[in-house]
Image 1: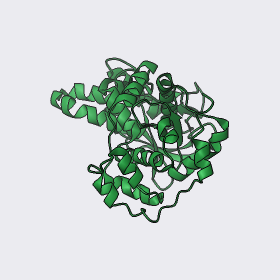
Image 2: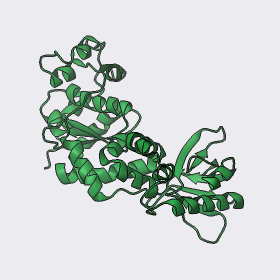
Image 3: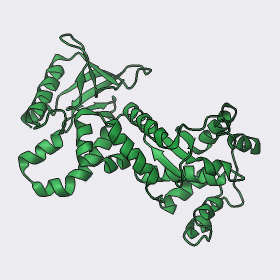
Length: 337
């Protein structure tokens, strides 16, 4: 793209705010491959904004305030006239070469122009999924996760939230999700757990209600964390919704409720997958949790979970970080239903 080539070395300062509650911070704004790259003073990338999805929040005045897409609270303020004009020109070119404005991204436009059909067939799905996953800001990922949770609630009912049990649930989360996240106790039928973008983990209420201790339920939380390490939940979602829907998201930053409802249904009904034991065991060790009860919950014979059992370093040294009273309280979390 000629316009992008012209401005590929252009940089300016800007004021970036990741969410409404955050303070504005000074960032360096530069052009990437059809994206705006926001970096700190050390050159570390903080965010990638798809130029096709960028929205101008102000009109005919400087500084100009931009947003990465509809419904996002993230903003970028720029008062450099050269950078403002460059953004305007490059976005104009992207819109003009798109055969369906607002629906197809620069990726498919470039592929069509080059005419390399083989690359479209073999590479576009993985490229679009990877790119879409990388450009989603933290606030947008949380919004997507919240939207998916609304759709899962239509299938599982609202998450259990008996007030007496919530302090114990918070302790359970702090133990197993030390970097943040939420555990939602729901009726999931035959599936025991699932992960949703934005740091959400769904846990089947039977794991809480039908086990004498927290080891099995905690093991499923750690399993979902390990799966997220191997393949981010956002990436799983984009793979599930398909290439066209992913490209549409790259172009306009939106996902329809119908699409999210279909994904939620698939997520809750697909067979359970297991992470590699080499990914999972370190999480058990960090949580000081015995992996044996979880291993036998998956396979009562232990034949398919041998390495989880033999690699268990916490069998005689584990330390539960919630008390018996906490667990009893947590077991009552669905009591008001």
